[in-house]
Length: 237
Length: 262
Image (cartoon, rainbow over all chains, first blue to last red; front, side):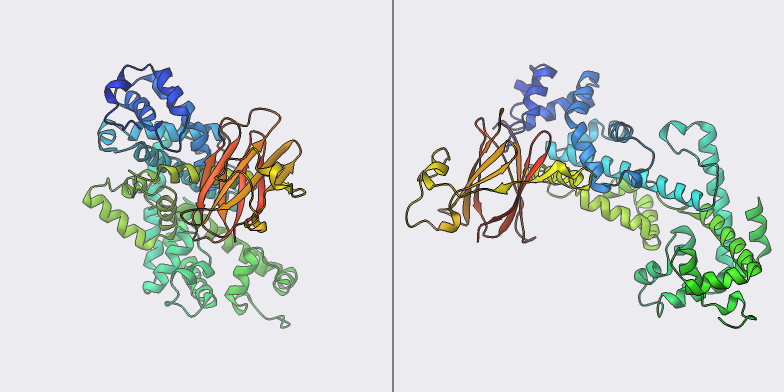
């Protein structure tokens, strides 16, 4: 079986199509791997667009399977189509996996592991977006924003910065009404992580008697927050 | 709850939380029905806190790109410390990092490419099972046991035919689903466990179909193989256990729901 290093001089004379044909014949003894590695090398180091398209063709199905490992439920991944998610994965990989990283890759498995991590994070991002949109729906907000990658224009990015700054001010105010570390944890987990009292109890089993105690503490906190003038002003902004 | 003077603060907080989460709490519903002012107050407060949650939700969470760099140990020490400090507070980022570590581990990258193939087949199977159209995953029926000569005539094995001393539990079997037939025979391995020899028979070409063998015992290894040019396949030195076998065809996945090697 040719190794990735030994076969380099032979691989260089092959056309991309020849490499692709040899790569797609997956063999249990992994003798197809040097050909696949060479396609990646040409795509990443030589910036061959043809090889990039071959990479996409070769691994599109696999990437979609990886996305499905994170969530089988299409609803969980939100409004993005399968094609859009797969395209995002390859775009992320193209941006992140450069020649320096390739030089450190000892095998095709290394490259595919990075590609898989891109697939997992893309699916997790889609899930984050979906969860945020569910909160919008809970609030009966008719203006559900589309957090697709196409909407990353400068105005949108500056909106994100403003929202983050506003959230930081809001958090400082909320934190100021907390009397101790237990209350701070409840407030953080309830409002920032959207955890139920039962989930909070699971995360901090030794800190509270049970989830009912958490509910009572949270009610007391909410009553203090309702009387906080600064908070009400911020929320009315 | 019979006292008409009872206010919202008299209702246990956990009952109101359960009601807000959509649980069936009839006495709360009844109370709100007979105390519309209290209901409106509760609704206003609930919406206020939903608004608060909407504004604060994950405002300090690391981006997934950052988490991915953290996973690959590609952050500066300052950034790494910031992420680790946040992970101590945030169960959602902690869960996402755990998912990344579980599904895209970075150890043993120079080895186990075969494990990657198995993981790929399992993901494909999981996705098929999750789809609504469950006819995509179909169970092959065990038909009448053939004579040993008929079943083993075409199968690759050390002996070619069953001997009298062979265990009848491992006599050759035929499984069918519509136009698909699977012949399977099991024999003792010279090294350890059992060898499974099989052949996939289709109306058309039976070459290069993936097979996955999943043990009942989760500590045993999952195995994968592929049919050759005439549809034959084998699993060698398989540990004794009960297995499910999945055969990934173009339009469906065929399952042999119990293949016992015990």
